Length: 464
Ligand SMILES: Cc1cc2nc3c(=O)[nH]c(=O)nc-3n(C[C@H](O)[C@H](O)[C@H](O)COP(=O)(O)OP(=O)(O)OC[C@H]3O[C@@H](n4cnc5c(N)ncnc54)[C@H](O)[C@@H]3O)c2cc1C
Image (tube, rainbow, N blue to C red; front, side, top):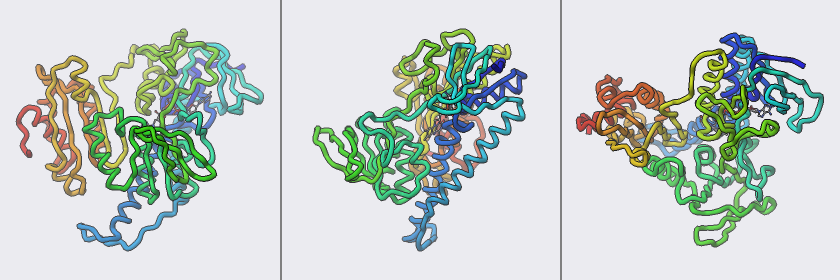
């Protein structure tokens, strides 16, 4: 039996960041990871999806130049070697996961490869196989940090396998299918669906609700809807998938009137959500919030010295939330006084156009009983957006009417993911409209739309 002060289960962005910080703080730390360090985020999530989206965008852009362009560019024909694109993506993943392994080592964290099964709050068995077979290694600890993440939700009548894909398989295509049905119009489905369409695949999206991106407000999702239509993606809203006949390559879909139609597709990507990964943790019998482990503002679970972070603890399932929680837990264990209470966590949807939302949207503010003003600045009035040929979209600010405290930012447009830093900083620092309006923003930049939205909320917009 080995023993340590801190034992972390799961080496995703939550677990590995907690381990690095704990190592920096001198806490003896063991990190157990069954697959690869970096977790979902670096291996099969955030990074590979953004790499594929970039490759698809570059190919699409070149293909568009085949018929000439207003910029005077003509590129007769574009082809893509998808195996090479996937290898390039894998190279980025390898560099990042290798970097994480090096950081763990540098900070004195012991990495144990294997699948953990919790015996009790202070003892864990690590087995070489995910099926929990083989010779176990026992590790005892003072603090146990659960960071086992999440996994894709499977449709019981359409299990993953063959031509039914999860996002993991869709991120490493051996070949590009002629047609792909994407089940679920949340951010993962739309990001990958758009990328596949840009790679030349016929894409149909099936969504049970009556609009795409149901968790974002309609003003933000509208430009994405228009972009999907322009790309030629077929949308089946208020529709349900009934099953797939893999031999005949037919997806059965029920339309809003209840009529069943057969959609010919080569592959189906199921992107209907993710659920916390609790296998191996059952013996702890922790208090739960639905499928997620319940935590308090210091990420403590219902058991003394057992902590939980990241996707395992439910929404928002975002890498930067997991990292922030992991860093904080390490500091609390080291004796620092910390709690996890962000004003806002920015969420980005890497569609084309991109969406970013931080804090309250106007309707959230109404629901919260706040009297707010909101103002929009369109990219059609922003010089930088024109030079990037992307004038669709806008920046919106929401602020309290009485003291002008900014409570929310939203934006939609090409490249707006980079505005998320400015949004999150202004919210965390308690900025007022006057602070942002009075900050000199570089010209020409998309950031000027941020300043102009604040100016407009004050009735002082200059460029509209
Ligand atoms: C396609 C896709 C795109 C995404 N894009 C974004 C994005 O752009 N931005 C963003 O913020 N988020 C994105 N996410 C979500 C993001 O990946 C997760 O929120 C994040 O990875 C959660 O981190 P985590 O540390 O909680 O868990 P994970 O990253 O899931 O890591 C958990 C780790 O624990 C390991 N593990 C599980 N059980 C055991 C066990 N019993 N023993 C040992 N090891 C175990 C797993 O192998 C895994 O490596 C995306 C997800 C997907 C699928």
